[in-house]
Image (cartoon, rainbow, N blue to C red; front, top):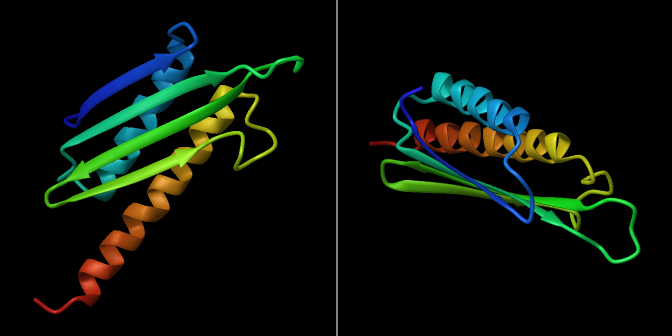
Amino acid sequence: MNTLLHLSFRNMDHAASIERLVRDRLESLERLDARLVSCHATIEAMPHPGAPASHFHVTLALTLPGCELIVSRGSKDEHDATDALTAVRRAFDTLTRQLEEHHAKALATPH
């Protein structure tokens, strides 16, 4: 993996399984675009009073030359954000779609 990764956990301990998932998904994005510069990933536990489990909010910021793609997904977006791995997967699914759309627009734009 050549892309610089900044991974932060808020209101929760570092989780090796989440880090491994983030690194794997970032490697997949690198196969789509080798020009990726950096990725900032923040996984935040959002405890809700009276709820049996925390919800998770995931923010991803992917930097390319001349462009930054940002995804922010969390409990307001989906009912099952009580699983951190699911929240991370869905955020990366959205980021992958954004990167594909970015490429489609770049190809459609005459140089």
